[in-house]
Image (tube, rainbow, N blue to C red; front, side, top):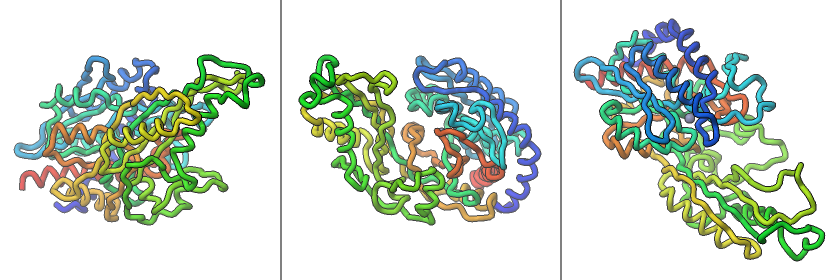
Length: 452
Ligand SMILES: [Zn+2]
């Protein structure tokens, strides 16, 4: 059967089980499974338990696995026909914190449908990935046309710190010929895509100190700097006036501009009209192939506690996105060297290196890639394109290291308006049906390809 026929055959089956799949997604989305440090561990446990339960109901022998100091993951396995290859289905059941409640139109942990989209924290990133896997399995009545392995991570949003540990402990359960990583985005509504490059990341926390203790701003201001003013100068040195990253020694490359216009980006982001974009080159190059630096946290005196005082110390956390082809540790070294050589007015810096994650460049050849391209094309009736993503999936690097022969396939459950990690995160429900049809079609095509 060709891809088109298979997709047409599977679509009614995907539709038939959609209400159950959707109910599972909504149950998951009600669990506030934040894996970031400082959050209650119980909801992540609960979401792992529920994830295993949902996969068991869809025919996979799934179980929760724990490692010392880690958030629980879910693994499982279902055999395919004799001789068929095995596909590992990856997603993550943890979510980002919702941020300020008043920025959400509806409660982040009460999934709500509006205008064809389902809103809630995690409904797209990445509980929709879990739901897509459930749907593809249900389309085959729990008897998949190829072997299926499962790895649903519980700490992707907090850095995947125990991934290698989990993978080596569960090596027999997760061994496979290809991996579907359902944790990325399609290009546009109606335009399927395979993510073939991802930037890496590196975190650095810089504490800047100017004096031993706070002093009166009237008595000493003008001769003695304050820590936040000095830190602002240090952070400003990270970009030039055009907003290009000013740190030396970082790689930078160009990407196919595709049809991305500045106006599209502005609309997705809600950029204020007076704000200019930063960086140079095509927008896709800036997002996918060049480094970026952002200040993601700041410790200084809150305005409500402000007094006429020169504060001695201030701290910023800097997040760097590392272009494909650049070693993440080397990029972190370059950032640290820049900070140390730009400390304003001789301020003391205490720099803490956070975790790094490597960038990724995927293969665009081989039977698994070809089957996925055909499956996506058949589900949408439009050929899939290769895209990059600015974000990172540390899982990929660790998985490629553990299983060097498996084909890694990064697929989308989000679209550009999903607002992952931000307020009013949402899933486009009609696109989600296509995501499910495509994944089910892929399982059929790839299962067949393994048996000649
Ligand atoms: Zn994700």
